[in-house]
Amino acid sequence: MEDAIVINGGKRLNGEVYISGAKNATVALIPATVLADGVVTIFDVPNISDVEALVTLLRELNIDVIEKKNHLIIDTTKIKNTTLDHEAVGKLRASYYFMGALLGRYKYAKIRMSGGCYLGPRPINLHLKGFEALGAKVSYDDGYYEIKADELVGTNIYLDFASVGATINIMMAAVFAKGRTIIENAAKEPEIIDLSSMLNKMGAHIRGAGTSEIVIDGVEHLGGCIHEIIPDRIEAGTYIIMAAAVAEKMTIKNVIPQHLESMLLKLSEMGVRMDIGLDEVTVYHTDTLNGVEVKTLPFPGFATDLQQPISALMTQAFGVSRIRDTIYPERYKHLHELALLGAEVDYSDGLISISGPTSLVGTTVTATDLRCGACLVIAGLIAEGTTIIKDAYHIYRGYEGIKEKLLKLGADVR
Ligand code: EPU
Image (cartoon, rainbow, N blue to C red; front, side):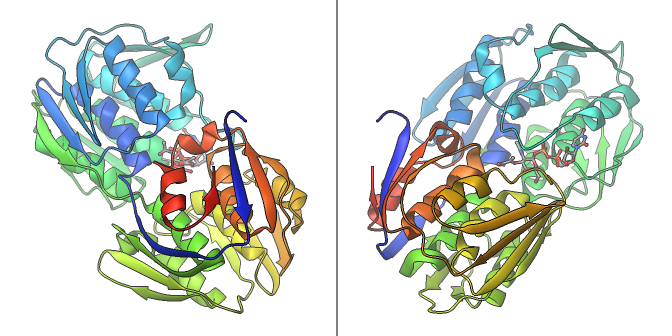
């Protein structure tokens, strides 16, 4: 069967899994290379389909890209600005980072509207408000955004919501703006710190990334650099949750535990036994899990991207677990799929309820989006019998080598 993951569940997993570079950092770092005049080498690039799409877009801009195992060598010296309307744009939402990057470098960007996972409405008004505050004019016609400026001038930009995407896009647009840009109520996610470190290595002057106030002093030129991507906290969180559900003993390596504090505390509250090391987490089998309440919040709160994976674990916990996703209240399509596997789930007024423990039984389900897919992989590993996860392409957008990693842990998966 094409584009499906098939899991024969009910087996205990054991061993080690190594976490890849962070997808949500990578998808910002690749467009950011447009700002450099020179060669940018990025290490620990995950081998996922989102990266393929972004590399296609770099090539559309006449940028030379050499792809090696888990690293990219990106030479921007022959770059040409052009309208981005290749079909790759529609494959992921993060292609909109080319707006900020091209606007920053050329004061002109034209791009077709982006795609990505449907998690309810995902407006980009804050990104556009930021571009306009820097002096750009934004127009939208027939599916294309056109953003242009005579000059970009630093200013204070207050974000009504600490949006990850808006913070990143404005940072990129502002690196060459005249004077000082201050982003207030900026998002504090680790991926933003990673972008700021790479831009600073290229010659930018950005302070405060990781806090709610980011200060960008405009510079005139950015050159090449070498950068290593941080580990993927969402991939790590997914495997930790998986281990809590089905492992005898599993060590998740290449983790920054500080990036996952709220999730690790929530798992402790559920009764999960873990050893948290400097850069790894070992999870042991636990007989009894307790139901918990989760509220997703911007970093350092519980990540919305882990809400769907932890839903699968909650089906195995005693009592009623509840989740309120304050970032994406409509991110609940996975519940329908979990119910097909036998879970007792409910959704009303933005509140997810999961009663447990329930015995899950394999059947055919659909990955409606990336993290729904991750949830279903965990549920499929728990379930007795065969689970077929259709539309697995969503999963390959964000989980490098998931089949190989699962096989190494002893899963029966193809
Ligand atoms: N929002 C607005 N206006 C805007 C921008 C955002 O109202 O202009 C709202 C959104 O509708 C949403 C909230 O603000 O309710 C958060 O959106 P944010 O901009 O922070 O999210 P994003 O940049 O679109 C990134 C990740 C998502 C992750 C969110 C939240 C990338 C490429 N995507 O999205 O990752 O869920 O931050 O942490 O970094 C995933 O990996 O599965 C994924 C969806």
